Amino acid sequence: LAEMTELNVFSCSVCLNLLTDPVTTPCGHSYCMNCIQSFWDGEDEKEFHSCPLCRQTFSPRPVLHKNTMLAVLVEELKKTGLKAADDSNAGPEDVACDFCIDRKMKALKSCLVCLVSYCGKHLQPHYESPTFLKHKLVEPTKNLHENICSRHNEVMKMFCRTDKLCICYLCPVDEHKGHDTVSAAAERNDRQRDLEVSRQKIQQRTQDREKDVEVLQGEVQASAVMRTLKRSVVVKRELSQKAKLSIYRSIYVPTLTYGHELWVVTERMRSRIQAAEMSFLRRVAGLSLRDRVRSTDIREELRVEPLLLRVERSQLRWFGHLGRMPPGRLPGEVLRACPSGRRPRGRPRTSWRDYISRLAWERLGVPPEELVEVAGGGAGGISLLRLLPPRPGPG
Image 1 (spheres, rainbow, N blue to C red):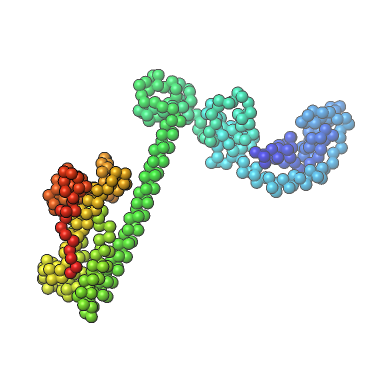
Image 2: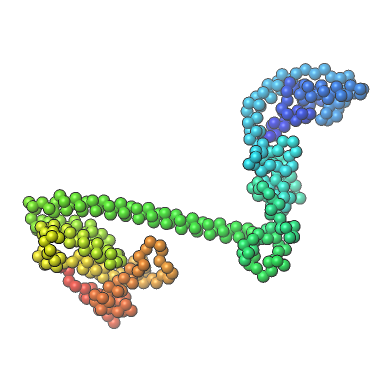
């Protein structure tokens, strides 16, 4: 807007363009040399010559000379300000000011009451005059008349949620009578809030996927380490069986079962754990699948309990630990919580608590309704730890 004001100051009031060969009349106004001379040529029949802007008269006709200082300023302005003025001109994709006549300028705001778009110059009355205080200004908008109700010729400031249409304040009286209607602003706020919730969900899913990728990368790296361990260490004949079992217990098992207390073990997971376990133990025993030796016989020979039994024992022990936690401890409160609704996409279909309840019933015969009391060692039950099989001794 400042650039536009500056350009107007150095514009000729006759041709409305920047001054060319500027001259200044005795009244102080400046014009292009050709513009003012042509204007006065048309007044030669009159006794007096006048200023086109203020109408002050001169007699005789003034002799004008080029204003050198003003010409220099105009040239500087052409270099610095003309680009800004061109940027203010409305292009094919811009919303043009409806008040501009000769040269259409970009609109800065559109008025929903006037149904007109204004450039900076013509927008000023909306900011300065009390008459326009209640007018609603929005970002420049094409086709403002589409916001007018075709039935009542009123601005559509309401929204019908029943028909999902913008309506005016008269529509709920007849055509949309009894419908769920709200103000357009309220509907916009609700949709923006829903959009923000959707954005947060998408962001959360993205973060979950990134975590899944990190976990998968960790699994790939762990698998590579395990393969290297089996190929380069376990198969070495110079290592004793006792040393290999020590590697199995201290490195392989903790790596394979990391975080197993909170696993929800599915049948597919059970099969994969058993396959990985026996692949390692067969190498420790110096056997292969071709030897057709049963897994139970290999475990008895090496005095190693099934890995799944270790996992289940740890899970039941952790459940008992949670059940004995005093009120106020977050892990215990999470255990006692009963969330409702569907589980998030990507999570196991069975919750960890339901899985432990089934495990306790199958392994220990503890009914699900008594599980928390038994796990907590309440007066009516016994400690779940006492029901657990003993820890295996060193073998």
